[in-house]
Length: 134
Image 1: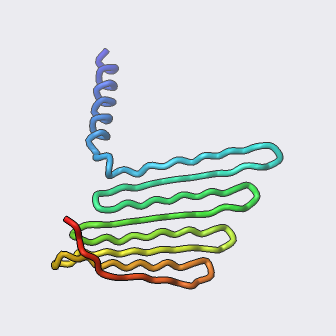
Image 2 (image 1 turned 120 degrees about the horizontal axis):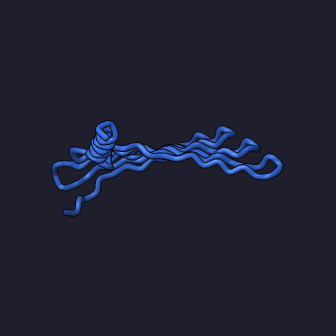
Image 3 (image 1 turned 45 degrees about the horizontal axis):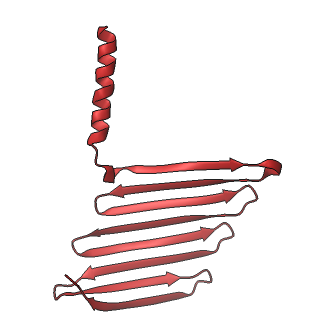
């Protein structure tokens, strides 16, 4: 009886400790595999990690025939600034990337900048200053 009570008490304490961790500070993900006839199929994976002031995520899809992609995104923010980006790369080597930054200025405006790089390596950028609404 005492051994069962200690096991239950330990399990309850472990669950309480896990639930004490904020939901925003966890990593989550899954992998899905679908396989069909004649060697057809795919594997998909996703994961996301959230921390106070940042997030990062990745996903991929791979087919049994060799087609697929990998994608990732990340962002961080705090103290009036933001930085983030996205990346997508296919199995044949083509990629598209985007980076973005924004900073709140002390005069009621915010400055931003973003750059997109396409699969052929050409980049486009935009930047500016905009008023901040309260």
